[in-house]
Length: 60
Picture 1 (cartoon, rainbow, N blue to C red):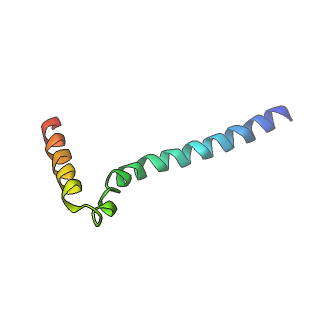
Picture 2 (spheres, rainbow, N blue to C red; picture 1 turned 60 degrees about the horizontal axis):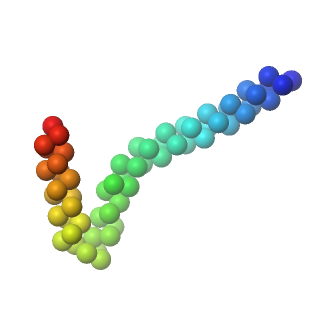
């Protein structure tokens, strides 16, 4: 019975970890999330986007 409870708990933990694993791919759109801030300030976010692109090109 204790093992069943443990497997149930690990199942919940695995579900939460799967949710976090899904949040991490969504974290990439969160990096693209600043474009919703673009209507407030277009140029800084576009410049930051260009800097990030040029930075990733340097990494490549």
